[in-house]
Length: 119
Image (cartoon, rainbow, N blue to C red; front, side, top):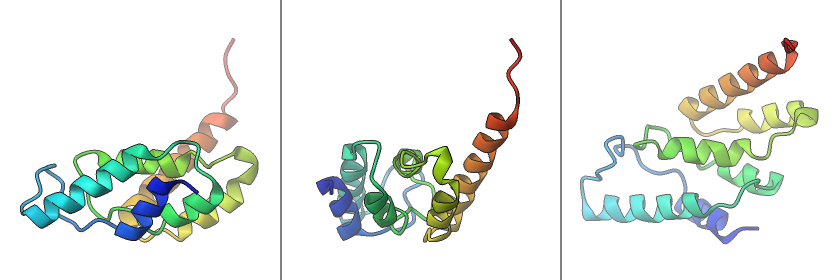
């Protein structure tokens, strides 16, 4: 288990209000700093156990792009042969915003995989 994933678990889902990337208080800045440091330290691909922790700590609001870094960590566990398991993982997401993004990106990847290439 990666220490950075455990740190995200300890911190939990970040509070809202970071869309601009400029937290409004010292406490908020500390949370922003710790959370972003932990997320950017996560090595990909994550394990299923790590993904199960991360899916419950998703940001519920935009975070000046950090939500995409977090999303990519979760997506790194995905393998086409485990689509049902991955969909079940997404359903556990604490954030409607992130759940929607993850499901839409999964649907898009499945559509791309079903389109024959033109060579």
